[in-house]
Length: 340
Image (cartoon, rainbow, N blue to C red; front, top):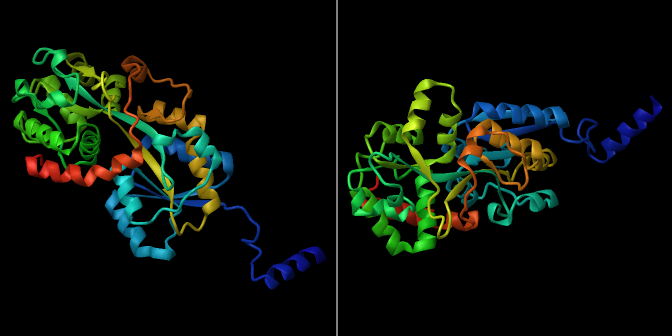
């Protein structure tokens, strides 16, 4: 009892309390715009390994960013998670992230998939799906071919203002130049089978139904259908084929899920531990097996029938931070082309 009294007195003299001095963080507050039920295991496993309790708020990205800005220095949020490089870049432009120096993250995450302020933890490819009864494989081997007049009335996509398509446009600008990308966007619009609508799964189903001959979709939507035990989903998969675009040039465009530590994080130690945990073999395998995404860490064993069936491909290695720099230009080009 005497020793405890002496320690308490010393802590009081230093302006500390016995509940937080020299103590490791015991909780972590996450704002997440990544909405996958399968991620629950990621959070549960982190708590099981570290004893750190996770408090999580899930909402749309814009709502969470507005919340962080309004909370300012009093924000309880430690980590922000979202999908797509354009969204992560938007958050970074608002100045909400704090730089993280971690030998673990630098060693495990490839340089082109991280920045000083945020890190990618999984990738998804922007693939082309087509109906072989309506379109020949050689017609859709590149993104650029989607603007070919031979595909008039056969192209389906979701909205051009969606981050997935904006990121693709941003990549095209950097690889082909703004002028060529504008011509491409106009050509794609001229080839629409119908006005953009729905999500990526809707595009795949429209191709299977013959509503359009070809569409762009993120790979994990197709993998989800491939792994489904529903007869309707299997019927869709049976009617379409997939292409890894641009294998003879700059590679298939990929996008990411990512996260960063917030500038005013009250639990910085726990935040870094969590970011490092997401790069662990266990978490990386879960991104693949639980949500049909690819790990960013090389050599992680994946047990996912759909991903194995889709096989390997040449991915674009454009630095994810550079990709974000031309997203705004992509939106302007899409607007001028009438790609709504």
